[in-house]
Amino acid sequence: MARRSRDWNEGLARDLQSPAFAREFLVAAIREGIPLQQALGKVIRAAGVKEFAARAGVASPNVLRAINPRHNPTQETINRLLRPLGLRLSLALIEERGARRRPERPVKSIYPIDEKLLAALADGQQVRPKRQAGRGPGKHRQVLRVVGSSRPVSA
Image 1 (cartoon, one colour):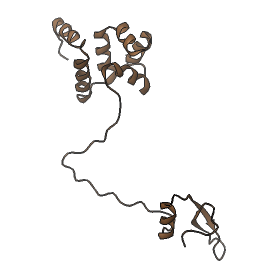
Image 2 (cartoon, one colour):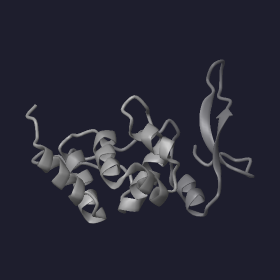
Image 3 (cartoon, helix red, strand yellow):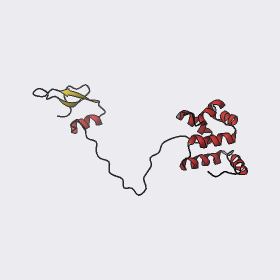
Image 4 (cartoon, helix red, strand yellow):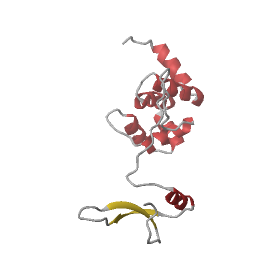
């Protein structure tokens, strides 16, 4: 890894004092694959650990522990540290470029579903599975019944 000059690091530390620049720095670092703890540590140290801890409402030893790569902070802790920068940790779906999206296959049900069942569900009635005796040994089958009704919804 190339060594950076002292004035480059000092200039970056000055720029990271700005919350807008720090926010953009963190987003760019994550996109480049830099670990969040490492990038957040650089921002926090540039702002001053005690000052940043006061803005975040977290004790400074806890801030240092959260940015230490040996520790594994919770999502709540990370979000507390990101809040002063106007950021929050979340997940987003990734759309693959150029890949054709397969149509979703319908989920198969182990229960027979008919119009009576759909009407009961549309009316907001609760439906539960129930074992129904069939003819002969071992011929039981699962049916769905509307709660409060003795008759099965599906045949």
